[in-house]
Image (cartoon, rainbow, N blue to C red; front, side, top):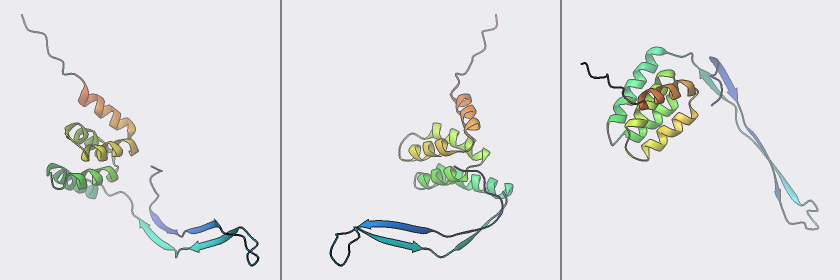
Length: 137
């Protein structure tokens, strides 16, 4: 995952150049065919982070994860939210999920997250053995 994009307008286009081998004949002495494709340019508006939207989205994703019928969609949405709070939620949901394919989607989110330190700390905290107090005599 790359750096967080700066808010503003991004304009992008794609150009594909390829050389395809072809049979050499008298009419075509070159053993390749040059091919070039150019896409149209598209504009994307990148908005600044919105804490209220992120919190609402995390709540919506939590509801998706609670239902067996929408669990995978929730795991995928959590994976792509990629905020600090989502990193903590990824760790918690990963340890709660019993089976595939949801667990794999959450694991992918953990591996791709830009918040690896937060994830590691949360997983260590959640997996640490519970210490019991010594009996009072």
